[in-house]
Length: 315
Image (tube, rainbow, N blue to C red):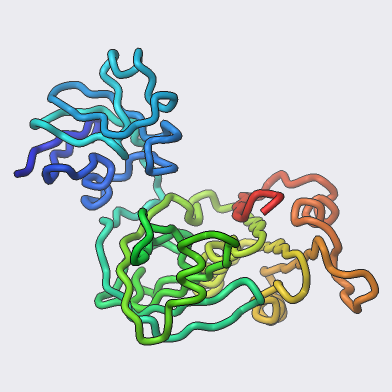
């Protein structure tokens, strides 16, 4: 059984399968509803029910309070339909956003590369090209693990805005069921299921401003894809990358970025190490990414479009 959902103010009407969430159905039609956690915990995807019978699902009572339910609000990531319905969502048009429908893919592991002691690059070959914008992510479905895991695509799309090959940079999280499986059990030749693309993290080229990328840990994936695409397209704006890790052993793709800085006069690269042992021959910045940026720009970042990506400070 399926129902029809009209999403205002777009006036778009889409089909939703029984049990399918409003968010999933919208994304698979290329309609972006703002969201974050995807599990009913944050409230970012809150929408207004204008007509129809809707099941709130497992929305957290703090993300969707009782009075909000009474006012006809729901969370798109949890809500399913019991009838045809009309909802109103806070949808902003973005001149730099491509309309790309989320799809499912089967992928074969082509190669696994140990980038650092804790980070592996998993190179996947998909059963069909995935269209995406550099900076977006995919969800990978791991056998025996509840819920998909999100990883940013570390390579840019081709000139047609798509790719059949996807690189994921996965840091092993102690006790993490998903990353443990990816690091310890996944092997070359294995098949995995992924879906995507997701997210609104991409270059706002229409801003026509110098760009500052700040990345920490495996948060380098999205900025790497974005920078590689910008340089390949002949971007003339200044592009700066401040990239931080704990130690030199964890500083992956450092040689690539140093080579790019030599090749492209408009690309500038600063590496920062927050926990490099004393007495080593590291002559770069010692400290955190934000400290390195603060020192380089003397605390004045005006006139730049900033893109930040990385783990919490204590991760």
